[in-house]
Length: 143
Length: 421
Ligand SMILES: [Zn+2]
Image 1 (cartoon, helix red, strand yellow):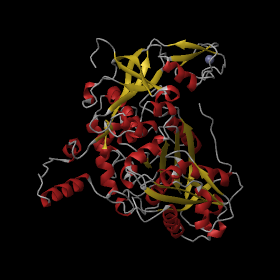
Image 2 (tube, each protein chain N blue to C red):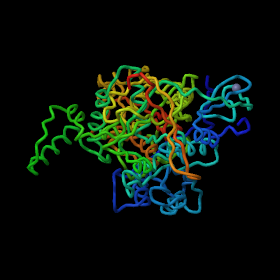
Image 3 (cartoon, each protein chain N blue to C red):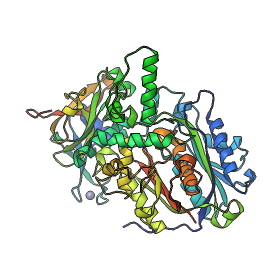
Image 4 (cartoon, helix red, strand yellow):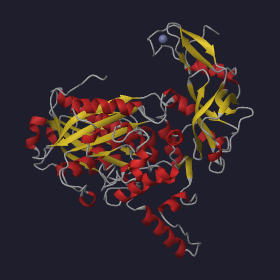
């Protein structure tokens, strides 16, 4: 695991394994999710992998009624918008991710600041397999 | 603290032109550019010999995708008789032609060229709405794309963060939309030349003629609240929050300042020019601002030696209603969290103290993405020279105007300050 390069490809492979991973700068301790190969805080280039707990807070969102072809193929559209947003992880970094298990037909019910937990959306098989990062309202929280 | 920069040689704008923006089945990219080029040559008070143009810089985002033809620099150069002189394409998503303008300024400031044509073009209407959305989404950053963000989606998310932080709501965005339509009504080259009230009246008329149920909206805001009239695209962005799909071209002629008098007695001087870049939603420290805009603005203000209060009017990149509010804060015209109030109080209207998007903005003038940056310059040219006709900002002494162009989801932003002396 430690040998993987600090790249988007590695980040995606970790998602396939249901791990949300970031990189931490050996020199200054800055944390980056998705991972960066070079530290933009201090210029350092030695990184280590860190696994995120997968809990965070919704900071911004949108419910998309007119989506790209891949989302239309999943059955999303005007009658069934999908939600995507910005989540601030408890470790401090932010990620963009799909937001599941919310009422996209009534976006006023989705609130900024709500606690969320990670989930992994697996699509396709074999070499075509892709995993999308997603979050859902945390257990016991109002969506 | 940003380094203070200046041009090695002054640069002036001596002529501008743009095609009428809209969706045109019978016009291609070359036709649009020729229309803009003719208007530009006609706008030069003392005329120009096109053979004197040293170089062309052309902004184009993705005609490759939209029209399945790339490499537009030499194609456009050929149609205006510029070959074999150089033509260079610039790409910065929706800020592509602002980059062309900037490259043209640098080419002259360096002393290498004297007379440079800059412009932009985009033809998008050959594609369906879904395909255009897909094409524009190529200019998001990869993480946003994988999270299925569309362009309206990125600005929708920006809006939810803004609403939450400043206790604003969708109703405040309506004020931007109503203003854009009311300005574009007075702009003969705008794609949508109707006020919201006129759109309502025509819908009522049509329903009546067709014997359908006649809508009973009490006012513009009730119309904009009606999901049948104004459907959601990417919450909270609805149809009337979004700029349209457009075709069009724009251009401007730049010359060394000392040569301007050969073309006109009334040029505009480029006194500030800035460009910044940004990282995307996940890496933003503040979801209610664009760091690239702030950087570009500081660079331009520093160079011009003036601040936001000296800017008398501006065209800002209102690809979505919320964007206009965020930009007028990032550019320093209003304090963070005060932009939506300023719009509500009418301060950005044509007759307000700080007119914003007098052209109707991207929202109503249209947004052929690669043409937009220089088309914004066209509006400032007409306003500062008192040639804006019915939408002329009143009050006389207009001297300083500015344009703000944003590419992608804030990845590339520019700010340009022009002065009439
Ligand atoms: Zn570091």
